[in-house]
Length: 71
Image 1 (cartoon, rainbow, N blue to C red):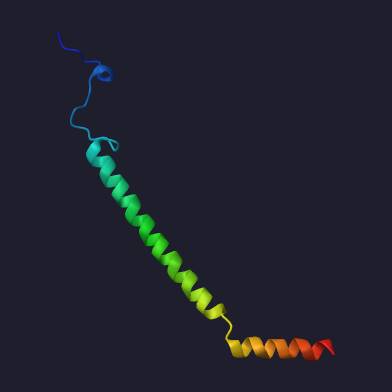
Image 2 (image 1 turned 180 degrees about the vertical axis):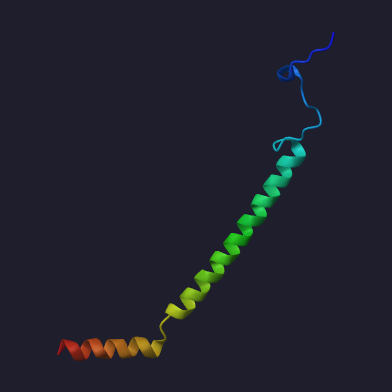
């Protein structure tokens, strides 16, 4: 007699995400995305710091202006 109850039958062809192959692929994808986001973040930070950096001439001009306003 055949068991027709679907809840007790297992699907052996179904690949789960957390088996060894799928989990390894999932971790590789996450790692790649993390590296990509970190690279973009570092690039944006570098560009922002480059534009926000003041030159020694600008610093000296700011000191002179402060001294002048103090008097």
